[in-house]
Amino acid sequence: MTPSIQKLREMDRKRDRYIYIHFLGVLILQLVLSKILTFGPLLLIALYPIFIISLPPNFSTKKLLWWAFSIGVAVDLLSGNIIGLNSAASLVLALFRNNILRAFYTKGEVISLSFINMRDLGVIRYNSYVALSLLVHHLALLLIESLTLSSFAHLLSRLAVSVLVNLAIVSTIEYAIFYRRSA
Image 1: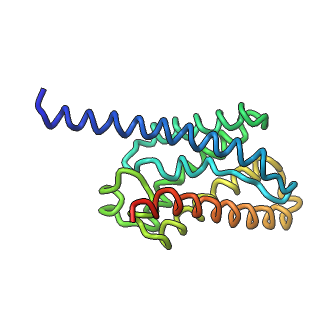
Image 2: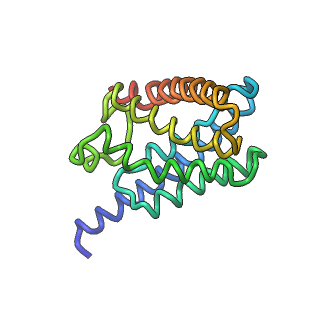
Image 3: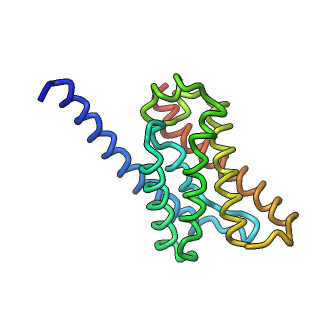
């Protein structure tokens, strides 16, 4: 085996370890925050989409869907929610993620990234990407949860509040842990 192939395999192993650690960290954070922060029916705290949002941009759709389903099922099972609710919303986000990425970034920028983060993409574009991703995820989650459009005004207000609060939490965490540390 050539040294370059060995080096690529080692990089893949490191990336996979990081993904598993990231998965567990996001899952624990989601479970802890959803137990601590309860604001009634208006606010939905769903930070686990950040796991799907930050996965490597060169992931195949199959891998992306597998990880999205895994984080959704884990949140469903461990938080006592309706089984399949978070999984379905995660799958919707995974299906739209690459299209959302293309809306904000050129192919050259995305291909060169190992993970999607604020440091590499910049604060404004990263937050725009996260906001649109959270909008897709939360819209899917709230529509599946309500199964109706009869109270559309309530759905829109809940969507707006949830996306803004979750965006603020995600941006704060990303900035405090990853962006600031690397600067």
